[in-house]
Image (cartoon, rainbow, N blue to C red; front, side, top):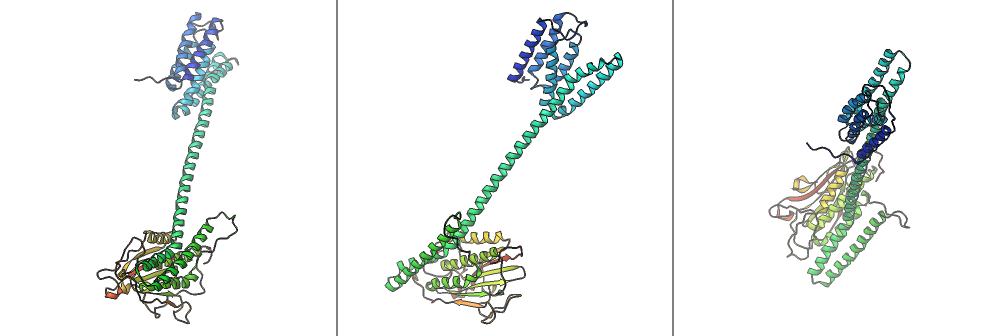
Length: 458
């Protein structure tokens, strides 16, 4: 068995108490006289042993208290020493402070019962008021040190609990900060990707066309498109930077895009899809008077924007249909495009497009799907597509009907092969796209819940 190493303060306290007791003994100062063991040196035995117990008051508190109780009783049969009594009171205090929780609860009660019993017993024995002094001294050396130790222990435990709670609060705050920073960085990444991916894709496609064709007129037109998209991309970047400003600048950030701008978006993409033989059609079967919450409108716009950008990268020649339909409690957004079976300039993808769209839908609690489907699973391509429940019938006089952006069916660089990537790797099945009879199309479909929760209207 390895003995615990005594605390330095306990050793100093024991040495000081022993020195005090020896000084009092040398001066002949005792606490009582006329005892059974009347020799002066006999009072040194409890004094020396009590000083030894002081050394282990912190490491063995209950053992020290038990042995100290025996020694304080033995000291009453000698001439006594004040230092012995003081050391016993300190041992009672240490037993409550450093002992087990059960001992800390039990010792004050026990000392209170002992004090009361001693007071009543001596009062009944002596039948004099002076017996109350014996009870008072017993309480001073046992009950009051125990109560003091309990109070100090409770304060220490409360302080430790508060420290742990503060540490936990700081940890939770740090976790919240990290999550907030991560979420904000993800949101900024989505916004940046959605803002510039369309323009950069068009730039990449037309730059490839300009490099692959030797016709000066076609090259000049491609360079013009590149410049146009470069300027538009810079404008979008400036808008994003404006959103990140602290508000001290003179320029105010521009408003976020809404579904009212889908017409212009489809027309702009249709202009870039000319070289790939793509045509674009917008079917908006919502009630023109109905307003959507701003988060839903922004998410739907970004979904359409990213889907149309992916058609420039991957879709084969044919028609791209953008469909918006309002149900009882949701907005359904769908974009269908021909399967990836085309030769021509391709823009590389990073895989962030579908990830960003899926994240946007998940933030609103909706559902998202993207992949190849049979031609019959998509919306009917034509102006006679059925109206949405509760919405106006499409057509020239039916509110928001069908809008079409046309593009010529010329394709540069017939020798270039398809280049799938993770952004929207269009699966076309055996044989490829719509022109070969495979009947495979690529569809992106999202269901965005619409809740009336006081959000600003788009």
